[in-house]
Amino acid sequence: MSRHPLFALDLKILVGTLARLAAGLILIVASLDKLDGAEKFSKMVENYHALPADLVPLAAVVIPWLEFFTGLCLALGYRARGAALVFSLLMAVYTVALSANLLEGVDMNCGCFSMESTEKISGWTVARDLGFLTLGLIALWVPRTYAAMDSWLKEKKIRIGNDWF
Picture 1: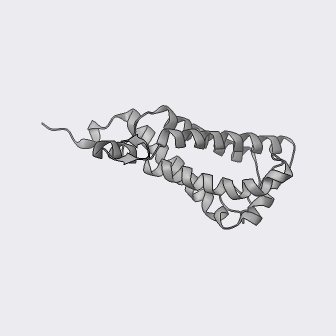
Picture 2: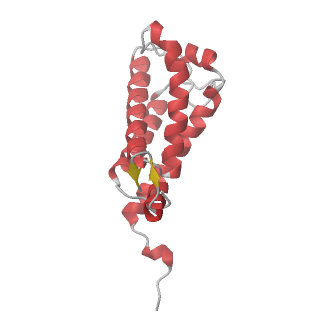
Picture 3: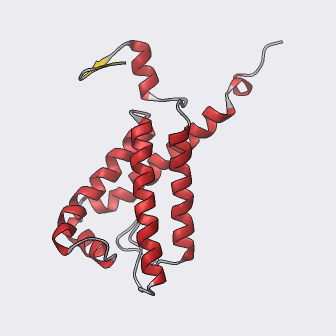
């Protein structure tokens, strides 16, 4: 009697795969509205009062692209553990920034997924980002996932830069 392939899946790897894919999609979706709107996004970054004014324009350009490419790496499973680390660090920074502004009573829009959003920061916003951080830590903790480009490259023995896969 043969087992259905679904029952042959390793639960830890499956959970890691779902966490990796979810984290990747979260970052890709979060970056899309910001990629073309650096000037508008810089105002949102400035509202967080987390960076010196001189660094806000640079952050407004870099952060959306960092989110997009980190999300893409997670979604594709390319250098996924490094991308999971970057994702986790981003979520930790966002959570701290949201929490600090919430504790100070700052009335501001989150701007997390849409710059047009009227979503005010709240305890739910912080809880959501803590959930996202948990996804990133799970993806970081699980060393191997299903449907990962790294596994495929290794199987095909493909070289990228100085690394052999």
